[in-house]
Structures are given as structure tokens and as C-alpha cells.
Image 1 (cartoon, rainbow, N blue to C red):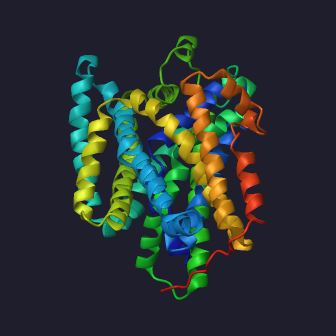
Image 2: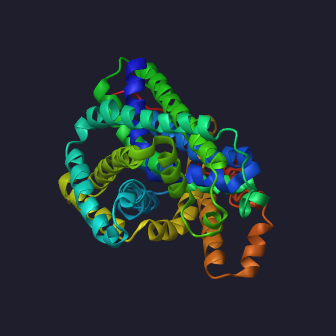
Length: 442
């Protein structure tokens, strides 16, 4: 059981840990300054805690989130929500972001500035062809990612973080900047959204179920115990690397002009720290580490998204979907990292609260009967508040922003939480209450 959990955990860790996981922690460390521990606590809570909980809930029932959401909310909502989620963590945001981070952090610094745009095209052509070839054989992904690539890139990151600790551990952090100065925990919590891991957990829970089925189990108890062990492996790996990368960013001396500029702080810190620590061969080390880290996520996401669309819309085959999503990811990757991050944030601010609310409903429903009407109301309230926040920010609606800021926990960027709890409370007393179904091993 321990061997099965370790292999599956390494596979999932390799698929999860990608572009955002590398660049956001060092950036958080630099910007949070003396408020580092509050900020990283919020980041780990949303980036690890919620993500792992979402993974466990999706994996404990082999029927998955499609079934749970269809029963508790409505089949049409399950399709709409999951299509939006899979497209977000797939070809529109996460897949192209992994490629652009690998290029901008690892490869671009070795090329002339005038060759940057052409270099990105050439790099992404090679990168996506390789990922596509691995994704064409999803049954072999445990061997290619879990047993080979994940241990290699994880050791490279650990080496960088460990040497960085001895190099910069005694350096005094700079003062906290921006929102980190006033709301370090809440800002760190929102930054955890940017990793996309809680959303990816919904997708990767399908891969986890399929992988665990390949390994085989004697009974339900062994399956459930293995799921929890898998979650422990992934959670520990994530937490240690997040804290290590953020600590490096917190103590690395970033020049004031860089801190004041629009330069991606995470990319800058990774690049500069590697050059100082490893000297002449630094960029080669960084290119290998970042490319392998991002590549495993790209291949895993192509598999997960293609599997979902093949099952939900069987008019097209798996290979067709894998080809389509690879081509879309390639096209968007060539827009550049800054553009991808900018247009992804509003979508994440809507999808993340909905995902967390769904997980809360599933957990509570494991213990008590909940009204279907109440659960639908809960998701409607959370969706409305999340959309309102995005609309208020985009259109600069002061009255709407003021209203949202008066909601409890708004200072922690959790204005949707109270409406969610109210909805769950109403679900306990409204009619059409139902208990969550238990599953049996096939």
C-alpha cells in the first residue's frame, strides 16, 4: 500500500507542480517582507490545503466530481462548471503558462534579446510536440512522470533551495509592499489561487482514480487508506518546496528598481539566485530544472483535460481532443507570460470560490443530509458574490466594492465565505434533503 501511495503521489506531485508553483512563492517572499509567515500561511492554506482536500474528496469516490455535482446541484451546472474549469486549467491558462515560464525563466536568458519572440516559437514547437507524444499514451504516464521525471526535478529544486538557504539565510528581508503590508494573510491566500492547484485537483482526481485502479486493491479500506497516504505525500512535497522557494525570495536581495518595476519578481529571483549559486553553468541548471518541472504538468494536463472531454463529449476521440488542446495551448503560449497571467486572474476569482463551496457541500453531506434546494442556493450565492467582485474591480464600481468590503472576512479576500455558510445552514432545514451516497469497489 505504501509503494502504491508513493508512486501515485509522485505522479500527482509531478503533474501538479508546474509554472505557478515555481514563480509565485519567490515573488510572495520578496513582496511580503517582514510579514512573510502570515503571507506564506495564507498561500499554503489555499495552494496546498484546499488543493489536497479537493483532491481527496474527488478521489475517495471513483465516480468523481461530475457525479457529485450532478446529483447535488444539476447535471447542466456540472457540465458548465467543469467545462469552464478544465479549459481554464488546460489549454487557456495553465498549459500555455507552463511553456512560457519554462522559456522565459530557463531558455530566454541564454538567447539574444532580438531573438526572443522567434526563440519562443521554436521552443514551444519542440516542447508541445514532446508533451503531446507522452499524452498520447496516458496509461504509461505513471512510468514517464511518476517514476522518472518527478524525482529528478524535485531534487533539483531542493538543491537550489538548500544552497539558497545557506547563501542568503542571514540576509534581512525588505519591508512588505502593497497589499502584503496591510493584509499579508489574505493576499497570500489569493496568490494561492494563481497556482491553479485547487482547480487542477478536480481534474487530476480523475487521473488519480485511473492510476490507482491500474495498481489494484483488495478492498475498499485499502483504497481509502491509500488515497489518504497519497494526499500526505503530495501535501508534504508541496509545503516544503513552497516554503523553501518563498524563503529564498524573502531573503534574496532584490534591487529597489526591480521591486518598483513590472518585472516578474519570481522569474527574476529564480534566475538571479541560480546564477549566483551555480556560477557559469547556472542558466543550464535553471533551464533543465524549470523545463522539466513545467513539462510534467503540461503532459498531465493534456491527459486530464482530453480524458474529461472524451467522456463528457464522446463525439470526438481522445487523440482528437489531445491534438486540439495541444494546438490551442501552443497558440496561447506565444502571447507571453504577462498576458496569460493578466487575463486568467478574473476567471480564477470566480472559479476558485465555487470549487471550494462545492467541496464544502460534499464534505458536510458526508455527515448530514442536505437540501438540494439549499445546495443550489449556496452555489448561486457564491457565484453571484464572486462575479460581483470581478465586475466591481473591472468597471471600478465603488458602490459595489464598498458593499463587498462590508461582508465578513472581506479583509481576508473571503467575502464569499459567509454567503456560502448561510447557504449550507439553510441546506440543513430546507426540504428535499439527501445524504451523500457511499461507493463500493468494482
